[in-house]
Length: 367
Ligand code: OSB
Ligand code: MG
Image (cartoon, rainbow, N blue to C red; front, side):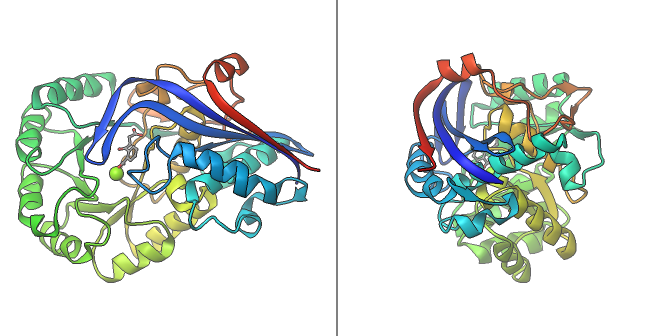
């Protein structure tokens, strides 16, 4: 596929409510999207980096620069296949979310031209995936009320953010109100390695999976937890940037599952490779969300149709978080999200909504 130009957009999309995690609060979803112009047509990709460089080292503002200054100059004026983007873009390792945006755009261009859906391309045969919703840090009464409303809407799984001191009583209150829901907790690494007992107390209150309780480097604390809480899942999120990370953590018995986020690992092909390796290793997988807009959420729903995703993911429509979005959204029906079946990754954005929320853009053309 010959790439003649890339247009990069920095968008500011309003959130319905702040998303608070132990790594910080997100109040406006600035997000980067790219449009590749190729000999077979246009393709769109999302860079899911958050506004602040907290969850990982990438941020939307920096990613905009990295994409426009360092990545697109290597792509335009060249022929490149979507699965070989790492050959063209030498900085994938340091900037997986930026690289993932360009990969998604190339995949979208190719699949749209061929009239094939992403699910088809990935070999996904499922028609829908169970829906899961995440809840940011909030008071216990408010979290319980919101959780109950989400279950009422049809969500089968809830993932609540926790941190030391705001954990066990929260889970007890949720369990009292919702004895049967699949309940995950996510600490974004907020517990110190001495906090194994505290995390065990949270688990005992009735959770099905604990996501990233300790910082990524605290492998021994994670292994101690795994040994003590089987069969409850210990899911790695921030700790897994590659297949090699998952393999090493499995070798050290420091996880039983992985939150697979295409952005965090450098794109959809890398996410599939990680999924396949999780299946081989007997690790559970869950499709991890990044407060994506409709574009990224379409990709996540297709990926989540793969058979290794045995723990329900962050699979809610983009509109659960975003009050405006240039992309069409997924729909929640009977507690499930339909896997997109149209050509490409997602339908194209609404140009007026895109323009209304664009705060910066940059075009790189072949000389
Ligand atoms: O830790 O899983 C996380 C969102 C942004 C960054 C990190 C995380 C999250 C979520 C997912 O918890 C929320 C969602 O997209 O629904
Ligand atoms: Mg997480």
